[in-house]
Image 1 (cartoon, one colour):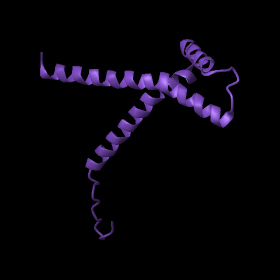
Image 2 (tube, rainbow, N blue to C red; image 1 turned 135 degrees about the vertical axis):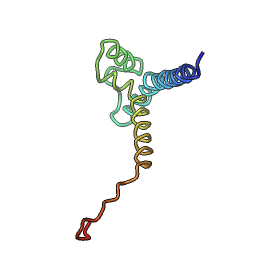
Image 3 (cartoon, rainbow, N blue to C red; image 1 turned 180 degrees about the vertical axis):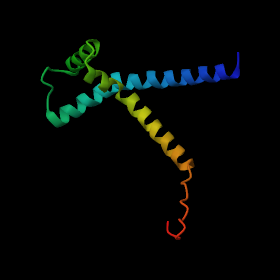
Image 4 (cartoon, rainbow, N blue to C red; image 1 turned 30 degrees about the vertical axis):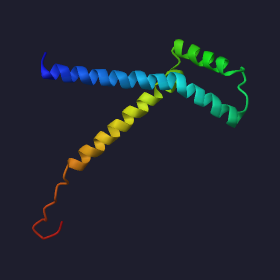
Length: 108
């Protein structure tokens, strides 16, 4: 097995672990937090208990509701946006600004 294949395989395993872990956060932990915060801010959930809230959310996910999928995938999407921002910041720090040459009159 070549070294590049091993590194690609390691990266794929690492990214899959991140995706699965953050999908767990989005599908299990975030709905709990949303339900509890909603109880404090808005009062009792209209349909009843947390089980009813989770059933409604999971039904929307199964039916392909884009808002529900965005909610479930938001921890992973937030993580990827953060990584992309850090990468762009590091790359931009390495780029040196081009010095402008003065024109013949001595002005910049």
